[in-house]
Amino acid sequence: MSSLYFMIPLALVLMVLAVGIFIWALRSGQFEDLDGPAMSVIMDEDQPLPKANERTGDVEDKDL
Image 1: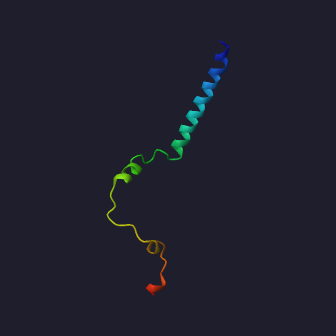
Image 2: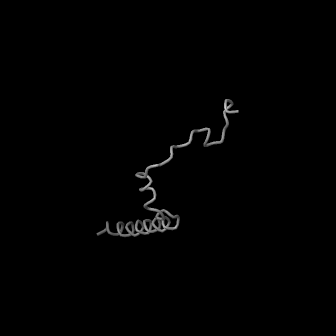
Image 3: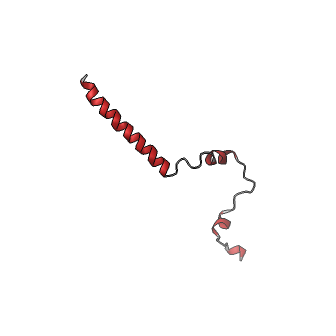
């Protein structure tokens, strides 16, 4: 019986903590786009990735 005096408040505190984390996740946008990251794994890219100098805009000496 004495263990219930400890376990019931502990369960209530854990429940409040879980609800708080869930509300934080909702407000921070964690559940906005659930399908986007999953679909990006299986989608093919039609164009190859640009080279490092094309991406940053650096110009090599031999191109001048």
